[in-house]
Length: 88
Image 1 (cartoon, rainbow, N blue to C red):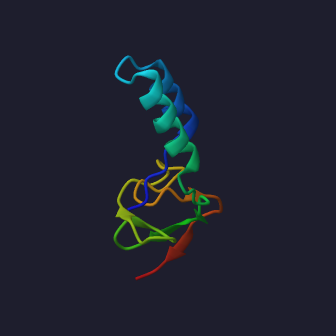
Image 2 (image 1 turned 120 degrees about the vertical axis):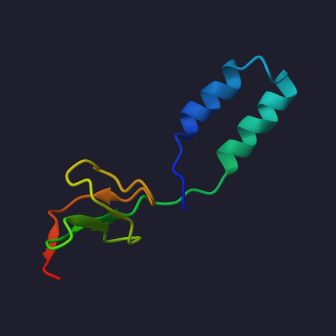
Image 3 (image 1 turned 180 degrees about the vertical axis):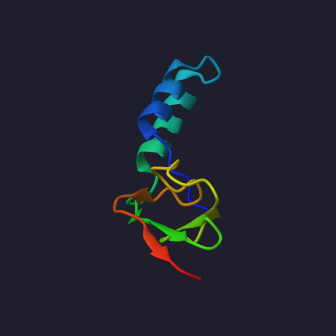
C-alpha cells in the first residue's frame, strides 16, 4: 500500500519538535526533502449493481460505502470521473 503524506507538514513538525537537536533536525529535514515522490493516480469507482459495492479502478479496493470517498483509502487515487456500473 502506498501512503501519501504531506511532506511540508512533516517538515514543520520536525522543525517545531523538541525531540530533535539542531543537527538532527537539519539531517531529518534534508532526508525528507530528498525522499522520492510519486504522482497521485486518478481513477473512478466501479459500481456493482447486484452486490451494492464499489471497487477502485486503480487498485481493486472494494467497499460497500458509496459516494463517501473522494480518494481511495487503499491506494490514494483521486476519483475523478463518474462511476461505471457493472451488472454481475
